[in-house]
Image 1 (spheres, helix red, strand yellow):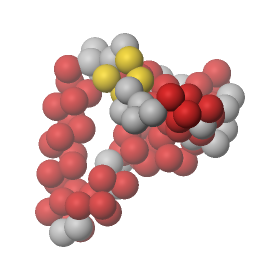
Image 2: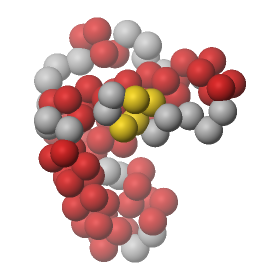
Image 3: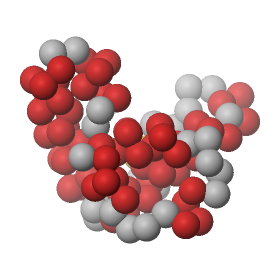
Length: 92
């Protein structure tokens, strides 16, 4: 979980999961772009919207724009080097 400026992991072995760390770094970048607090507010509002849309918590979570961007690009370890600002908007 990314809580600016930290990445919180369940156990230290997860530090070796490059895709997971990249996924959370993408979230840190998103948080900085939205000046931290608005990110969390947007995240919650979009989750609630998606929950009404899909009527399924897991599906709602996976379709939040921030998550869509992070999941689609977490395997690309160079993604943050060329990511454009506010790229999550492409996933709305």
